[in-house]
Length: 63
Image (cartoon, rainbow, N blue to C red; front, side, top):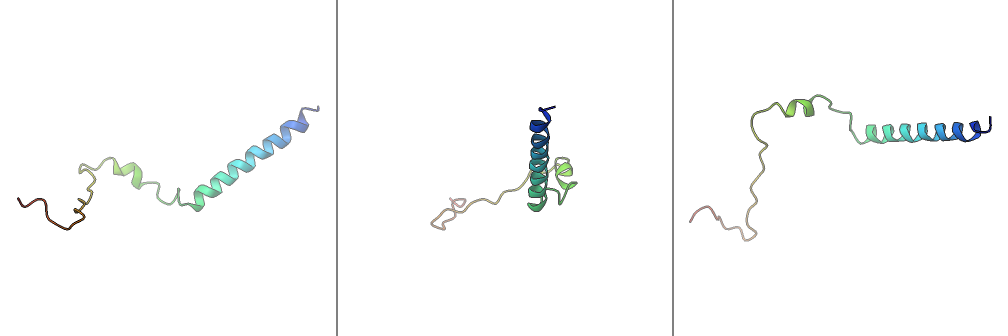
């Protein structure tokens, strides 16, 4: 019976941590778009990245 004095507050603490984690994830937008990340891997084209320019502004492609 005395184990309930430990288990009940422990269970309540775990539930509060889970609720806080869910609220944090919802607030940060983790559940806004659930379909696009799953469909992104089905596209054939690789992701494009802009090419960085040299710091001095010269074009290195024309030699």
